[in-house]
Structure formats: structure tokens, C-alpha cells
Image (cartoon, rainbow, N blue to C red; front, side, top):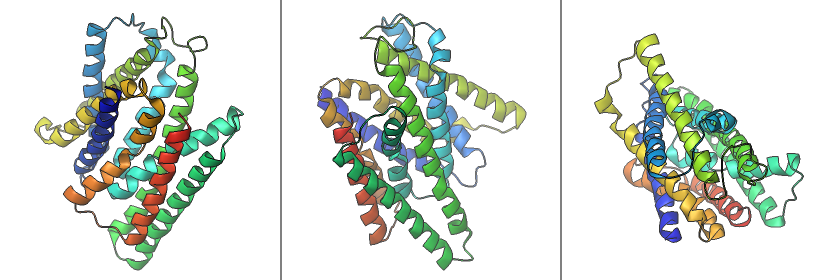
Length: 304
């Protein structure tokens, strides 16, 4: 069962990336906010379902207690949605998924953890890969001086890097909250409910965020929200939530294999973007992306 959940998470998050990109309309000013709104709505529905069908003895104070983690995740995702309006998914997804390298460095610096040789090599591969992708994007801009697409594209290239850093901060905080039942700030939790309580707190916070975004768009910006046109954003939200749900159960089996496998879901994103979005990159870009993915997989294998 754990392996089925692992594959489900891997495929779900890869498919979610595809729909995120398909729903990212660069001509639609608030496309990224609408995507976050849809994700929040779907996650909120799932959270309510969990509250009604499981006996986790949920204390709503945990929404505030877990807020620093939830906020980092929500902010990083919204920033990522904005960048997808201008940047190829094949480049954006591997960079965003490199947050594990940043999280490892944060643990090394602030938690006095040691760094093994394999992790060090993985971080170097990821760092060099991201730097080289930036060089290639800058080269595109220089070769297409009159191209607005590439001028915006290079600026957008920085967006997944911001995502990576902020998401890594969320992961770093998350490690503190979920490290031990004795030290977690969450209240009324047990060994069996800790992760579900944390995940439910995150999803309920995202639901609140979705409601606030709706109020902002509809009543402050007077933006008309055509729900029928949000199908791709809604599909992305469903696959995102499905992957998150099965992720916990995947780690309950062989955690090391599950973690290393899931960390490579960007490969699915790249394959789908090549098939369905017809994205074309140079062989140099694919080679560097492969280096980044190798680094991500190595980190997933040794840093559970």
C-alpha cells in the first residue's frame, strides 16, 4: 500500500504542475491568486472531510500555532503560480523542487547538524544547475533583445528561486513542529494524530486564505470570477491535495524509498510539459535539469 501511495503522490504532483501551467494565463492579471483560491477551496473541503471522518480530536488553536509553517507554504505556492505565467514548466519545477537543498543548509547552519558527503555533492549539483539555468535564461534575453517574452522570462526565472527559499523555510519550521511529540507546539496531539493535525491546520489556513482572496478579487478589485474558466486551476488543486493526502501514508512504509521517489516528481512534470505543452529546451538545458534532478533524488535518499 505504501508503494501505491508513493506512486500516487509522484504522479499527482507531476500532473498538478501540468495543470498549474495550463491555468497560468500571463494575460490574466490575477491568475496566480485565482489558482491559490482554488487550491485553498479544495484543501478546505478535504480538511472538513478529515474532521468529520477521523477521530483526531482537533483543537482549532492549532491553526494559529501552525500559522508560521502554513504561511510560508502558501506564500511560496502563490509566488510559484505567478512565475509559471512566464516561465517554462520544465525549468520552473526542478528549481522549485530544490527547496530540500536549502532546507538542508538551514539545518546545517541553525540546528548544528552535520552534512554527509552525498548531501554535499547533491547540494553542489543543485546549486550549479540552478546557476547554469540562470545563465541560459540570460543568454536567451541577450539574443532576443527585442523580445518582451525573454525579458520578462528572466525576471520570472527568479520567482521559482524565491519559491525554493520560502518553501525551504516552511520545511525548516515544519521539522521543528513535527520533530517530536514531546517538543511540538501543537496541542492535543498524539503520535498517531500529529501529522494529520498539522496537515489539517495547513489546509484550514489555506481555506481561510482562499476566502480572503475571493473577497479581495470580487469586492475590492471588482474582478469577475468566471468559475467555468477555473477548471484547469481546479484540476491542479485536486491533484495537489490528492498527492498531499497520500504523501503521509507513503512515508509510513519504506520512508527512504518513498522520499527519494517522490522528490523526483519534477521528472513527471518535465515529461508531461514536453508532451502536452510542447515545451522545447536545448540539450544543454535538459542536461543541467538532469543534474538538478540527480541532486534532488540524492537528497531525498539520504535526508529523510
